[in-house]
Length: 277
Ligand SMILES: C[S@@+](CC[C@H](N)C(=O)[O-])C[C@H]1O[C@@H](n2cnc3c(N)ncnc32)[C@H](O)[C@@H]1O
Image 1 (cartoon, rainbow, N blue to C red):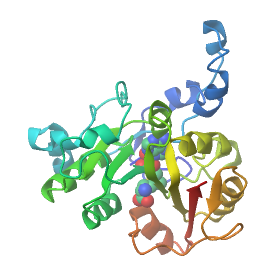
Image 2 (image 1 turned 90 degrees about the vertical axis):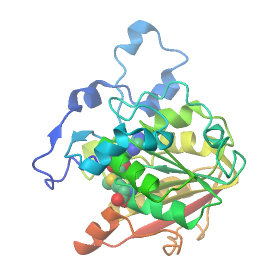
Image 3 (image 1 turned 60 degrees about the vertical axis):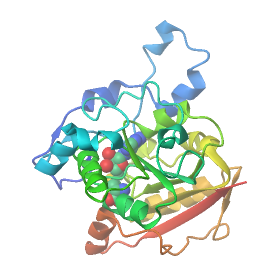
């Protein structure tokens, strides 16, 4: 999983794409510029990603899942490399040949980390299809390994940037989008990387079905109130707990690895659920 760059938790990890992160185009502002930009102007646009990829140890099971044919059905695209999302325009179609079919309720989890809670949710609700997207290869491998060893038929895993993926999907496509314990980007100069921002929420909301949910949670207090302000003021979304309020963790959301770590450090936990009007 990408270690949060503001933390010193994983001193053995090696940043691999800092340069890319610093020179890429801000996916949010690129939206605005896309139609008017010229090749010359593009050179000066900077992408700001919501993640920073870091090289961390891949265990044997994760490596097996990324290479052995029996896990291939879980992996939508090449799980090594930069997460090429070319050709992924329809998440429902990924389940056309599975027991649930393409019309079943659909959840997209963004940034599942090592995948434990994502797989637990998918196993608990076999009639719902679950797509997870992550940029961290060891996490993708571990998640595919768990799905395969449990024989889940309602899971697909994508390697890549969720913002880019969402832009490629149809409108009104996904019933639930969940974002659990996104990188908090604690330093002020990094706030622009926070996933929950008005620009990125426009991209998320567009692909939600009417009445569909966006569910997020964080253990970082500043980000919790930031999320509340962004989301409460976002036209087209309604806070399920009433404006200004957080919601109790619903029973269907298992505790995640990052959540446990936050709680062990004395952090609180704040959940938010919004429906699309
Ligand atoms: C702090 S971790 C939390 C992981 C997990 N949800 C948990 O609670 O244990 C955030 C994860 O989101 C992933 N991530 C951040 N931005 C992403 C994006 N735009 N697309 C896909 N994954 C992303 C990171 O790679 C990282 O693994």
